[in-house]
Image (cartoon, rainbow, N blue to C red; front, side, top):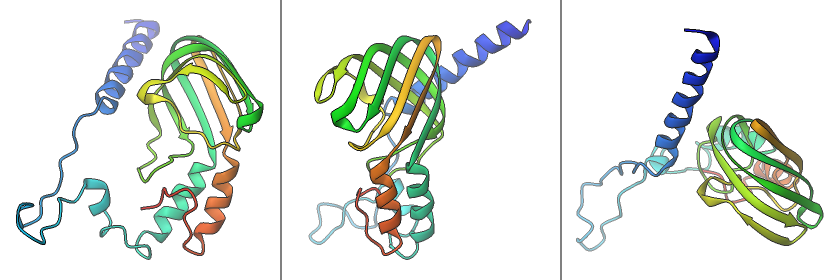
Length: 187
């Protein structure tokens, strides 16, 4: 097998793996000992909230600071079909045109909600956006961006890049040192 075939097979396998991960495979809930039909029963805990003691702020302090630091920068290397280009200097000064449906590896950027920032995933976007006039469609795999983002993205044929600095995440990171969660993305 040539290196080209190995690379193609690897890309196909990675894309299939990412599709399986991202397409809503249900995560099992950890059941409590009481039935939810009993008075005073608590609902089952989700895997995320039970991983680290039910989100206690002191126990989660170090992981939350690390995740908030990772939220500041997005640097994704993309593989998949598309032709698109975009640049943003806040939500008021951004432009995007084109379409792509890709798998990525790299720094994910802002999470927007409490979840583990995996360094791989899927991203898709298509249409035209100029400032606050947004005629794009993104589907379930669009990256979360904060309104103060500075960044750019480009996709040519099957390779692309998405880079962004999430300015509001810098404030969220700093506020986290005194237990304030401005983005509501801490565990």
